[in-house]
Image 1 (cartoon, rainbow, N blue to C red):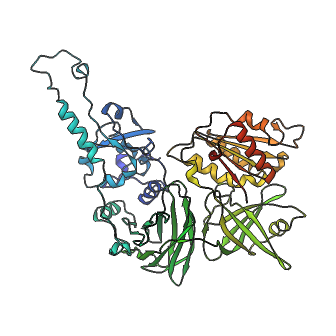
Image 2 (image 1 turned 90 degrees about the vertical axis):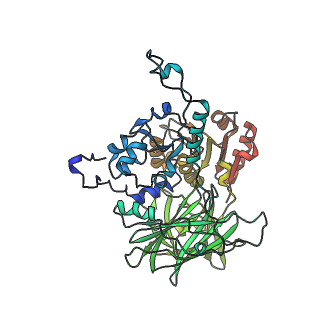
Image 3 (image 1 turned 120 degrees about the horizontal axis):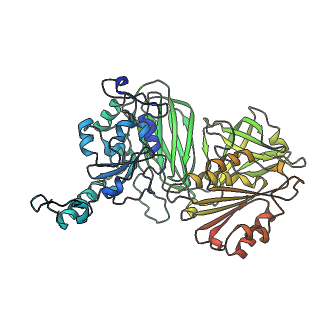
Length: 557
């Protein structure tokens, strides 16, 4: 971070922020699901003595009006530079804050960084009077009631007031509300052409009160002069799927959770244009749609928005996809990048799609799990689906798929699968057991487990079975992730290893797995994927080791 010297500041004491550190970037980070509190997101009291320990740029807390915030992640986003903010680190910075910029809505800006209330513990006499003083000079010790009252006041300051309930008849239910005056002043003070909405809508009130119907959805939106970002919240670890498209000026987003489909429609204030981007944040369950504006302009509102009633999914959708890229992963496996023609599609973690291809009078169907982002060297600005396809020369479909060229069109359907991300909620140690292209569902699970903040995953073990070293998919990328995070351990097992191979040799068996997986499995979970015989052998071996049925998931296409 470039230092900001007093002589270099403008009259408003601002510094030039590094790219990617604007107010909008900070808001996006706060909504990403990352734990910015450093304590797992669970609010707890903080004593002044504990607060004083957090006074470095790598670990900085401060208190304002009885609330303690972890400002470590916010330092590079501070318009006045990190040095200015560090003046209040490790202490009650209320007086300093009021002198510099009392008008700033710090409560909204640092909401995701809140650790808890500042508590005033009853001090020992030795702490108060470490040098002899005359009776008249001694401080009057606060009463227990005063100390309790002060701590309760600080705790009350950390409780968010209950928001006004949004009903189906409320105008806010169908129209995006503009930013508050406080937020507008905050935006203007940061010199950014950005606006942010409050919670803009909820699902329509339902007449069917059946407990089987899914929870209501809500959405927020933010904008720049060039684009609008819609965030739809489905709930913690709901593992949603969905799609987005523009048709006749209307933005339509289909959201699928646990076999239910709901449709979000937005008639925007002004015209939007393709391409759309679609992202899913697994831990928070947020779906994010990024749409470009046809004309660069800051809107007063997002337009008219609504959610449909929830309907049960009976038939997975089919979609035509255009081939955007075909690249080689190993000597016999290709990575095919596909862009759904109507608009981007999200496949839930651990779920798969089916590829359809007509052969003479019959239809050939095969299942593939998209690998997710971060496992190849290309960006995913068009929210593409990436399928790893192993070529079998005598196969019915793989020779056709691996010979596809740019611009070719194929048909997918889906998504399919019964994997529930909620199963991993209490899991601290995750075992992923894969063979060959069975690695594909594990790749997304690795990224999810390592990025999860609450609770934090302690260890991820990947046990990867292949024939030869040349058959190992994404070997270089796996090594990079191991270097980046020591919680990930990768163990390769080869059945037809060369004489130079120094690793484990063999096939999946009780003997091999029992050496790697301990019997204390209260917070462990195991996932398997590979050929049918491999999967059944693995499940049987895990049960013999002592892994319970509800701690095992087998991916079977």
